[in-house]
Image (cartoon, rainbow, N blue to C red):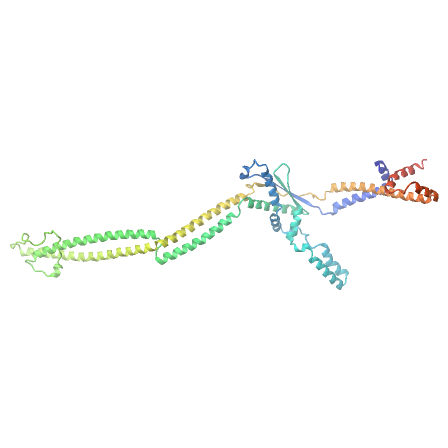
Amino acid sequence: MPFSVITKIVWARRLTFLTVFTFMVAAAIAFTLVVTPVFQSEALLMTTLDRAQRQQTQFPDTLRYQLNSQIYIVNSEDVLRQAINEFGPKRLFPDQEEPVQWRLLDVLPARLLSPRVLETISRIAASIRSKSPDDEHSDADRALLKVKKRLAVTLEKDSQILALTFRHEDPKIAEQFLGLVVRDFLQRQADLSGNAEAPAFFRRQAARYRDEYKQASAELSEFARKHSTYSVSQEIELALTRRDNALAALAKTRGSIAEKEAQAATFQNTLTQLRRRISLPGEITGPKQNLPAGSSDGLTESNKVPANESPLLLVRVFQETAQSLVNLNSEIVGLRSLEKAQTDSVADVERKLGELSSIAAEFSRLKDQVDQASKLMEAHAGHAADAQMNADWDASEKLSNVKVAQSATAPTEPVFPPKPLFIALGAVIGLVSGSAVCVMLEAWSARRRRARERRQLPVGDERLNDRRAPEPDDWAAAHGMAADYRLRRQGPLA
């Protein structure tokens, strides 16, 4: 049908056209006013290659693979569930309650139906409700399904920027939840790219070796307390020093004894010479000592005391010699006692050295066990500190290869429904619908008019007319409608 004809038909039925057009535009405006507005928060992430991946720049797919991997990580259930649990499913979707039809089943029958009918409908509703697949899902599961529909991650063209958008009826919730998603994604990215479990592992190992160190130290302390030994090597060194000192003192004492015995033998020889003239008891002279070989102190013909010497002088010499001999004998007795004590001390030191030698191996084993546990504990504690530093390095937003180019925005204008677009679309639909209604009404009027004209013709003419041309269909009536319209418009003028 020509456009000019449609225009004339619309102008002829302009009231109908205006009614349909106004209804469609009003419906579009009402829809934009009634429907709940949806706000969209947006965040931008920039991806860079780390030092290990910069060496692979000759492979053009490296960055593309990394970006696609990050998109999958953002949409993963671990990231989304963590964000949902932190934000709260009820807070994220407050209207996530029982469907309206179940609430109507709980409210309407109580007001409109009898108790027996109410009980029957309640059992039927309970059976239907128990078979609903949504009842098997928790609030977090239902929230996850909605979040996956409302969260979009796209890669900006010819860039390394990932655009994250989240739609929600509340702009504050959209901004806060998208911020949580970005934060959890960065944490998950750090966990995957780095080694966040290393610090915990080394801490567990350090705690384990700390317990072993405590146990080994307790065993060493118990062994040392039992044997009164706290450092075998040092005690052996001290015992050897004591033994050397004791042996040196014993040798000196034995030398002193030999010296005193030689002096006593000389005094005995002198007294023997003097006893030729003076008689003295044996308590003074003491036991007779053997003279050393080659000694010339014995009485001989050449050293006999002359007979003409003064007896008083001989008595004086005899007294002094006897006194010196008595002193020497007492000193010899003391030196003998000292020799015995020093000999016992050397024996004690030798016995102590034997005991230390017998426990040296066990003590060394326990000491090595303590030292080994201490070294392992210190090494794992140091590794834990290094691993924690590396994990903090990977988790840092400023040092990570994924950086936040734009934080989650606070939307001010809703993205749905777009009022200008919907109003324009309603106007277009109103134009098309109004024109279609006018054309349909005109076609229907033409068809009724033709039917009325056929009923007014004579019988013969009607049969002749039936033989000449078949009954026109709807499309023929639509095309012939224009001619009828022109004839009716030109009739009064003629």
